[in-house]
Amino acid sequence: MAAIAVSLTLAACATQKPPAKPAQPLKDLSAPAPGPATPKPAATPEAGAMPKVPQPPERPVAPPSATDPAIPREQRIAAFVDYAATTYSVAPERIRGVLAQAEYKQSIIDAITRPAEAVKPWREYRTIFLTPARINGGVAFYRDNRAALDRVSAQTGVPAEYIVAIVGVETSYGRNTGSYRVLDALYTLAFDHPKRAPFFAGELAQLFALTAQEPQLDPLTLKGSYAGAMGMGQFMPSSYRLWAKDGDGDGRRDLLTHKPDVFASIANYFVVHGWQPGGPVAARAAFDPAAVEFVPETLEPAHSLQALAQRGYRPMSGEPLPADPAAEGATVVNFDGDAGREYWVGYRNFYVITRYNRSPMYAMAVHQLAQAIRAGADAPASSTAPAGR
Image (cartoon, rainbow, N blue to C red; front, side, top):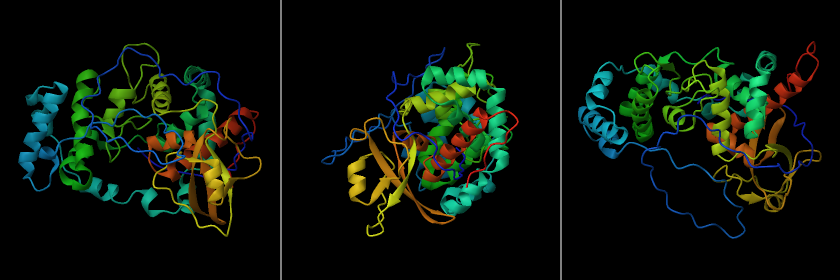
């Protein structure tokens, strides 16, 4: 999925009330079987560790017979055909016929080796997305689709402005959904990018399963990003199969241009990854200059606020706190901002945003863009949304 970010001062209340009920995945006509998942060994929790955020099973990856670069390429492709056909009950001749029309693209390899999250500091990365045009575009998009967005938000507990921010960050509100054939992107990365071949070959297999389930999707013409993500919300094939929703009951799930399905699917993605309705996302933190910066191994909210305070991180006065600070976990992120180092506490919902894209800068961009969109959408129609600072 795409990535972006921006910096806005947090404007939530210091303490939020607990939600009336937990978030619920949306129901629709389709509930495809996920296919075989790769089991993960159970981790032994550390003493005093906070509870983990429940997550769906890992998405399947392709086996070494189809991804080991030591195996000749044609042999890997043959093994992939067997894997995809057996796993997802797709005719092998169909898979071979489509793959015969796939093309290797060097530009895809070039793009995936230099993502913005990896090469830009926060002070530069944030300027890509928190601009007046992006904020005002989000306000207009929200106002134009407010009834549908608010309906999904009421059903799931995911605030409408976060759904809009995802669409804004990923595709500029549907204006840029990608120009690569999804088939070419996944084919190139599955067979010519050894570092992540198991994942992308798994996604290529999921593409065949998806287009068998959703016949309106043609694998030969479907366009998306250089990583194979598609539609207004940039869903990978496995995410499309497993978590896309039919938002208006028309009998199909169309995430390319059909907004009711797009909104319902983004919200459902957050729900299945543990979104906490009414919960805070992040808080600007004061950092004790006598302490050593803490860089957690993961972005999971695995630390109590008390433990983070002992490491020198405390949410600033007026910043949001969980309803029960002693029971909710958090993490910290450290950024290079315009005015020097920035310190943030990320809560459970911040972690959920990173399940969409694992970059903490991406999650912060979505969060701050969402807040700017909410402020603009709730302001009088003649006013202009703030551009942040």
